Image (cartoon, rainbow, N blue to C red; front, side):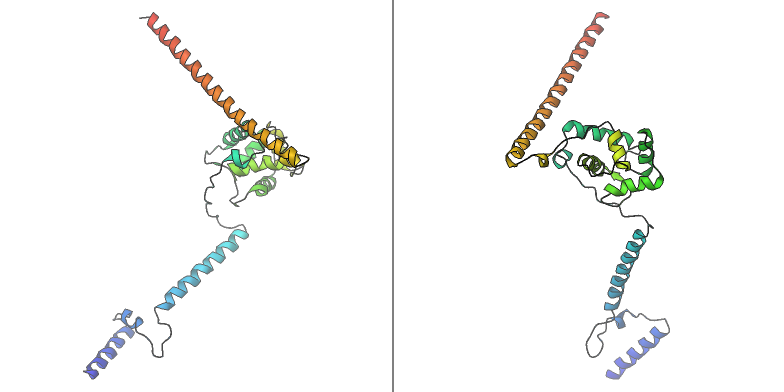
Amino acid sequence: MASDELANKLTRRLKIEEGAGEPAALAREEPEGGGHTESNKPATANADTELGAKLIRRADLNDGHGEPQQPSKRVFNPYTEFKEFSRKQIKDMEKMFKDYDAGKDGFIDLMELKLMMEKLGAPQTHLGLKNMIKEVDEDFDGKLSYREFLLIFRKAAAGELPEDSGLHALARLSEIDVSTEGVKGAKNFFEAKVHAINESNRFEAEIRQEQEEKKQQAEEKKQRQAAFKQLQSAFK
């Protein structure tokens, strides 16, 4: 029986070498003396290939080639993250962002920024536009998200933008007043505490004002509807 088994193995190996057999069974055989099996080689090769592909992709991106992966959208609350601005200022910046987001995709790309700067009366070169985006482009996708757009005005308010830069011109010509002084401008701890309380009270007052405005608008709408119905009944 041992000779029959040996003969079968030799016959199977011969068929494999001639391309007529199935090599899967041989690949699972444990080699003499222990060590790794043949089945481990493809996994190692795949890992090496994947790592190599990642390194090549990173090198291409660094050289300006290829398309970066779409970053995950970061959810944030502008009112809590950008506390140095009032609700009205943030709403004005949001409106401006949406006005120039012609593609309505939540980003301002290079061409949309070009159009914005032209309308603001401060046209920029292609390189100048790329440098403007690069200054606040946190995820390196080559365009401005809403949060990155707000960073422009934060830098402007903090005096971190050179006067001859495109971003400084954007903030200056936007008609959005960002000349606010944060808690850092307080002279001492107690003044800072008072300032923080005043900021909190101001925030609450702005919310109440918005609510009152919405309530007034709803009341006016209700009155217009009642007047229209009364006018309709007069013609019946």
